[in-house]
Image (cartoon, rainbow, N blue to C red; front, side):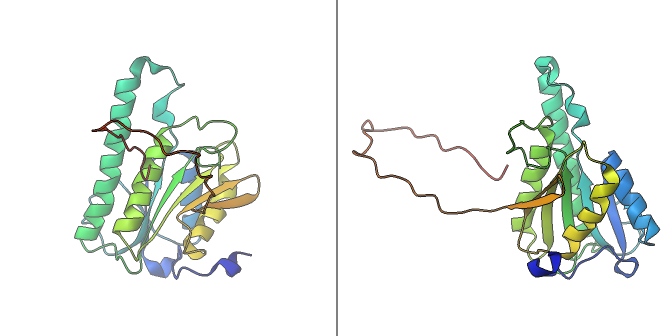
Length: 220
């Protein structure tokens, strides 16, 4: 079925250069073992960006561990931590590009989050809001770094990490048109935009002479 979605021209392959891994999480550890078993060199995302030779791509993992149990007593500190993580992730990708180690035409950037395998749209709300920050960053990068392959992949953290390693590798090789992908319960979803019919109101809304309208929302 994966072949029907088209190939990306990317892969985690020993000949393609090192894969930079950022973040700390059992999913990251499982994927690192997956790469090492196949002879793919791995580089830690905390290493200097101007290091050894070209890299195939970057995979950033977010487990939301820094968010805690939802208690809002330290909300400001935790929000600041999410912002700091986003800045450091952006700096990592930017540094590799500026150093000429990451190629826009052949490289990839993947983000892996733990929002339940539903991107936060499931019946149970996402427990780790920090995943939304990584998702927003990756979706913004998908617009800025074209034609690079850029995806956000959300998984269920309750599932065995080894199960996701092969599936994450598949996302590098297949379906170049999807930016947001969810993996849970042996199923895969991709998120896209579609037309929704909007009923015509009986009358136009009435606004004051000089209205102030707030427009909110965005890639995150």
